[in-house]
Length: 379
Ligand code: GDP
Ligand code: MN
Picture 1 (cartoon, rainbow, N blue to C red):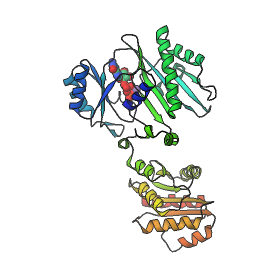
Picture 2 (tube, rainbow, N blue to C red):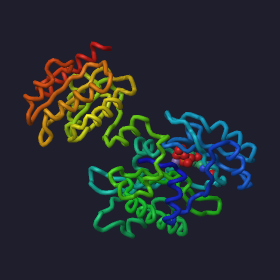
Picture 3 (cartoon, helix red, strand yellow):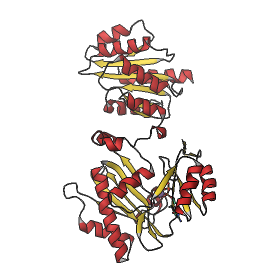
Picture 4 (cartoon, rainbow, N blue to C red):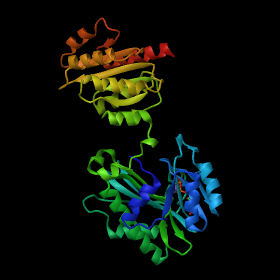
């Protein structure tokens, strides 16, 4: 789950990371009044769940309150990478002497969190990683040992030579590590970490992504969710307790189990189709869940054919077949639907689907070939 910069900054502040305090405004009048309170040059920043706001024109300096109003008017309502800006953060302008990058995320290959720092901050770190990877210094943290002092000293030393700045940076890195672990983050990032006019080190941008699988133990963090920033289909899926990822293709996939869902996407691709989504209906045969799933994947109007790929282990295939039939009797759906059911009671299930408009298939390949063919017929 992503949160806004101002929310991440609040968390950073709680953990002792110096940030640039600001005020959130939803209208240009509010932005103007916030700017007046600062009584100096301010920065007006779009609050959206995407990076690269600066480049997109979503971060602007304003010398006066009147100018802040004008700038806020432009930024509010702006579309940045597909998301409409509904709020801006107004903060006192900071004189920047140096811009650095610090971030913590999980390195899956090494199975450890990695702390990355770079003196080439400010710009998108992906760009630095692609063009000048030698400018990124990394340290991997052993989860049993935790972050060690020598690592913190090395990383801080890679960014600044001034002893006071090194010391401040070391404290920031330690605090960021606590945020990352205690809040169950998948990313905790400061870009840029700046040295201001007075030589102090502070976080000028704050970014946090939480690990969805750990959110259940942080109701306070869950409350920071902004459904405004999510795709409506994602919100509906979350509320229906379905694990769902929208993709760009035309074949809607309903699968039980995440592993089988991944395999299904691969096979659909292999046979020349494009999956419209990743959707795991779990072990349930609950017709309500199937109705929700079908509504979600057909909602965008892009889906041309649907594939049910169900492996019946503990779940019985006849139960699932009944769930699908009941679901379809409750909604109008005019798309070809291929159903592959295998495992416990599969013959019985296929028997039940006979005489319906559903297209039964015995194997995964047969089902995928058929659904790809059906989708092509429709396009
Ligand atoms: P992002 O582009 O979405 O990562 O947004 P950032 O919050 O990182 O802002 C983008 C850039 O705007 C930063 O790298 C800074 O160069 C600049 N910026 C942000 N706040 C200030 C400020 O208070 N003063 C100055 N001079 N520049 C700022
Ligand atoms: Mn940034």
